[in-house]
Image 1: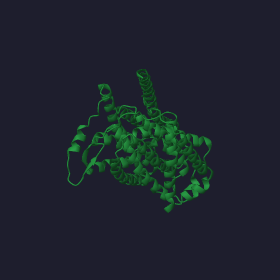
Image 2 (image 1 turned 60 degrees about the vertical axis):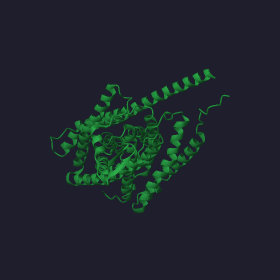
Image 3 (image 1 turned 90 degrees about the horizontal axis):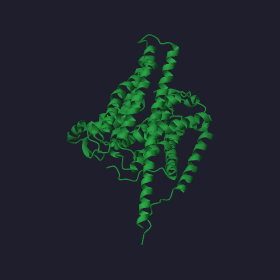
Image 4 (image 1 turned 30 degrees about the vertical axis):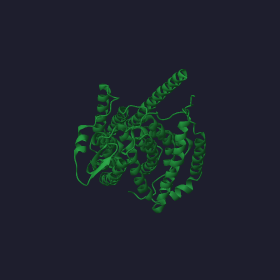
Length: 364
Length: 84
């Protein structure tokens, strides 16, 4: 990592508009994180960069808002009995190793092929991972939705049943979210992959949550809540590493945190009103929409690396703007579904409470 | 005798105001001492603990405030059995 001594000299000046902008993006990102366990970072980092924040400072500051946010979210969801702390910590430690390895790969790519190479690698990772995982999550959600079994208990996948059936002496650990003993030889690579993805596309949860659900067999609500513990462990380690190099702009991190703590509480409350399938619908939809956003950038970086014919300046600008617009849409789309679900849930709960109170009154 | 059920919980106005005030003071200090904070927080080495500690402090006070804030507004979790 670049050692920027005196990085503070490069920090941007903050005016009211910038503060409000960061607060708002933080709020929406927090809302989505509270609900699906991660998200928001893919908009926050480019969002900060659009204000003139250097890339590494944006990544560092985003990470420094992520871990306290994840902590508050995890504590909130622990109150609802949705967090498996042990699983989160076990996965979090291996995720930290994945972050370090992923960052090393990034650096090597940057050294060999420059910024365009690094950007192309990030965009292709987005497209491949989100293409496979996002499509799978969304298809699974629609299958459950169509079958009319959305209220039924979630089925443990065949893969998860197999994973839970393998007994490797000396490595077995009981996890309450799985209600089973699983070998940590399975959780380690999953955590590692989550960390690697976090270091590459900033949202490790896009692998973390689906792997907890489909590979280990955790219920969706517990998977998304446990991801917050993983994000906390990863984020704190990462922030400290960046802070050692003086790259964290604490002002940016805390302003985003100001908004995201409002959002994360709301997102966490939202999970108590929805059917588990909603977690998959929101996560899968965001993943697939973001995939299109990043796919648009692949030709831009490919042209910069001279892998394809150069693109006109106008086309590059259009692709960049459209790509950023689609990312914002992805986040707002997810936030919209969460807010509507929360509103409907609150309304129906209030109706029930009023009805019960009236009936109670009649009896008396 | 009909015993009165304590169905109506008291809203945490006091908690929201207290933590809200502390969080506001923290943000005012952060924004009015930007240069001093930026210089010291980016020195690296052991100074790296400063942003980490700040993040914990802000998350505690502001997190408690935002939690109480939504409760005061009546936006609370569904009262149902916990997920097992």
